[in-house]
Each structure stands twice: as structure tokens, then as C-alpha cells.
Image (tube, rainbow, N blue to C red; front, top):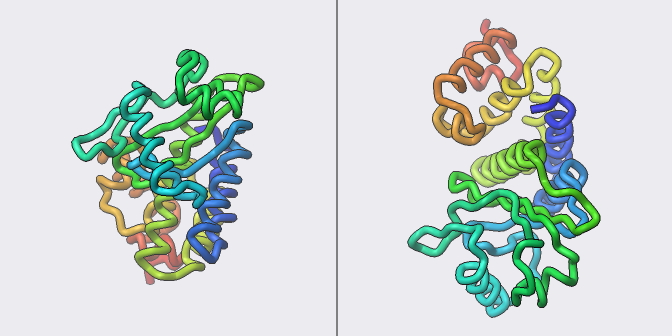
Length: 240
């Protein structure tokens, strides 16, 4: 990942880490996403049932109608047996769908042209962004940036929930930022995920790399920071 993009992701993490509530954390990530992946037609955070978790303006009927429409009419999303979104084509060319009911009732009002809606089964939540005809389509760099934001969003939520410390995410992000000059972007990503009690396999999955590659990155992090464990890496204390 481009170093500029990686630093922008961490700026978003720092801002979100200072949030005192879950809704404020989500809002910070949506704002950071809009800056990093410009999306003039909207940004949202969805769970695997295609339910927007960052807004409370939908009643149950509206949510059901929205989901029923996507499951039966829009082919870019795949579903599992429980009818939860499990995969899909990342870039959605809304312009190719013509005068469908969805475009007539919703899309045309926003002038939707392109969507970037990755659904990663390993992540409970996924950020989705949309662009109008005024902007270009999404490219590979946009996909990469959004994947990084999604991984960090889920990581911070998990840390806050499991440890019950509102300031923990911000503290961890500061530790990562302090280490950035010595670490490569990928090594810094591994260190960020060390804050969450993930297995090395889960770290590899979150970063879309192989297990052996993740182990190599982690070993280099320990070597560069002069530590022997994840705890020492995050505490900033080397071996006695």
C-alpha cells in the first residue's frame, strides 16, 4: 500500500480511537473514509444482513424491503444459506442496471453511478461507498484503502468491546504511530492487529496475506522494536 494512503488510514484510526461511544467511532470512520476514498453519493457501514448500522432512520419494514430487493434483483451480491451477504463484486456499476425499481426510487435521486461495496466474510461490518456520475469509477487503490479501513474499523470495535476501555484504541494507535518510522506499512499493520487477541492466522486473513508471511512480518516487528512478545511491542518495553 502507498505510504501516503497508509498514513491516512492511521489518521482515521487515531481520530476514531478517541471516540467515547460506538456511534462516534463509526462516524469517525465514515468521515475518514470519505476523505480517503472520495464518495460524493454517500458512505455507510453495513453488517452481513445488509443493515446499515450507522443510521437509525430505517424501520424494520424498510430494511426488509431493501434486503428483499437486493436478494432478488441485484446480482452483484452472493448470499449464504442464512441469506446473509457473503461475497460480491467489489465495484458496482450502477449505470449498467438501467431503469430498475431500485434506481428509480433510490439511485436516481443520488445520481448513483458507481459503488464500492466489498463484503468480506471474516469481517462483521463493511464500509460501502458510492459515487455519482460526476466522479470516476473506483480503482484498485480505492479497494485497497477501503479494505484497510474495514480491517481497522473491526479491529478497534473488537478491542473496545472485549477490553471495555474507551481509550485503549487511541492508546494503541499512538503506539503504532510512534513505531511507523521504523516499520514498513505492512509491519505497522501487523503491529496494529497485535492489539486484538487474534491468532496469527486471523492476522494473516485480515491483511489478505499468507500465514507464513504474517509470521515473517511479526518477527521483523519484534526485531526492530527490540522486544520478544506482542505485549512488549505494545507496551514499548523491551526485554529486561
